[in-house]
Amino acid sequence: MHEEVAPTHKHDIKSTKTPSNKKHLITPHLPTDIQSIQTNSKTKAQDEFRSYNATETPERVVQHYKDMRMYQTVEFYNRMEVKYSFENGNYRRLMTIEEAFVQLENYIDASDPDLDLPNLLHLLQTAEGIRKANHPDWLQLTGLLHDMGKIMFLWGNGKDGQDGYSPDGKQWALDGDTFVMGCQIPNDAVVFPEFNELNPDMHDPKYNTKYGMYAPHCGLDQLKFAWGHDEYMHRMLVANDCSIPREGLDIIRYHSAYPWHDKGAYRHLMKSEDYEPLSRLSLVMCRDLTPSLTIELLVSILSSCHLKDEGNELRGKKMQEELWPYYRGLLEKYGLGEKLKW
Image (cartoon, rainbow, N blue to C red; front, side, top):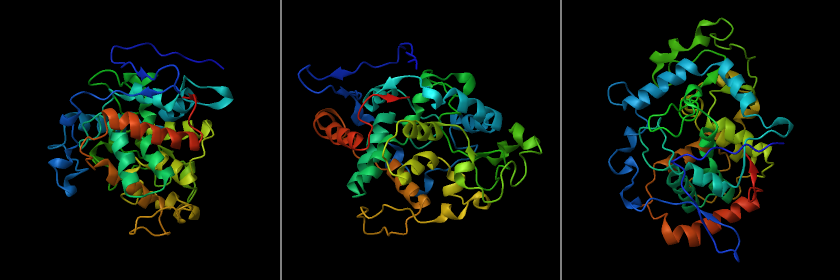
């Protein structure tokens, strides 16, 4: 087993450490002007979020989805599956979750028109929003980790849509709404459907039909969603034998699959088990939730927390004395407290 050490880039931010007589701790840095960093929830109405159109959506976002549609193919998925494989002891680097947070500090999502803030703050806001809503700790941890698969940019490049170092880097295989490879792309369920015809697979009879390369009701776990941070992080957590419940792992794997969980696409490929209520929900205390929660509803909980602005209180002394000790405890509880394979 070989550990690949990524090169140092000028965008890397050094971590701070506790004194040697204390347990080793990496405290990710937050900008000193963090109070000026806000989500767009202060200026946008709820129904304006996730509003995509070619005239009002930022050009970088339009180009991002055009690139996704052009380059996300079955062949590309298969190639990434090999590159990021954890089989036979393969991995790219050993890091703790906290070390990975440090690497993600300067990464900004190029595909989301509603979010212009460091991923670290976004993930903490998501986790804290879930925590304040009294959802179980595994769902809080899911919120903290759900976007960490973007760490792929450490080993990616612009050609493969995984450039997280350049300000205008191509990220079409890191971020964005995912759709299923190997079958017809649903025009009524994806953003910018006018780009569907640019996908090479949509001109291949093996892939451009309703079922494409899949059998009817084969099940979600058999589908190849567009390669990105979701699929990578799911595989990483499974490879490290974490004990996050299946529900949390599914949320991480499918939270960007908006055509499925938001628009209702791909029902003809789902098996009966995919409709069953999720288990292990006895800890959910929020009064408007019931034991009949499905993966779609839990993903919507995660999505709603994306838009919450927590007043940017997640910094400085609060982070060091309250947040990290709490979330470090959750990481240890679910088997993610040590060096992990990435």
